[in-house]
Image 1 (cartoon, rainbow, N blue to C red):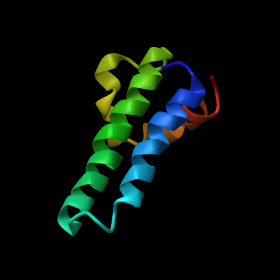
Image 2: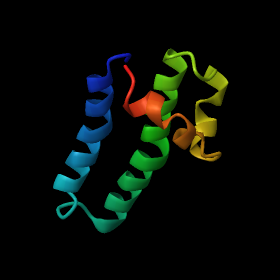
Image 3: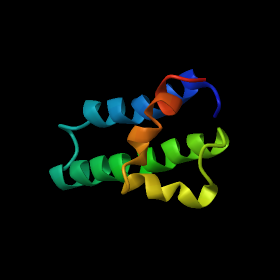
Image 4: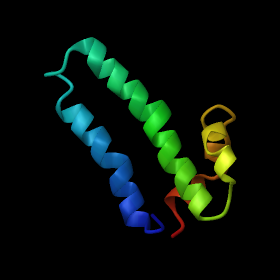
Length: 81
C-alpha cells in the first residue's frame, strides 16, 4: 500500500460508510464500530503503512496507538508517497 491515494481511500471510505449508516444502526453498535475504526483499524492501517515504508518495525505497529508516534509520522503517513 505504497500509493498515497489508496491509503487515503482505505482511511476515509470506512469512516464515510460509518457516518452514512450511523442513524440506522443501534447506538451501542455504532459506538463499538467507531471505537474499532479509531483504535484498531486506523492503528493497523497507519502502522502497516509506516512498516512498509521502513520507518518502524513490525513489532512497533501497535505501539503507535498509545505513545503518540502517529503525530511524529504525520508527514510520512498523509503527505509523502
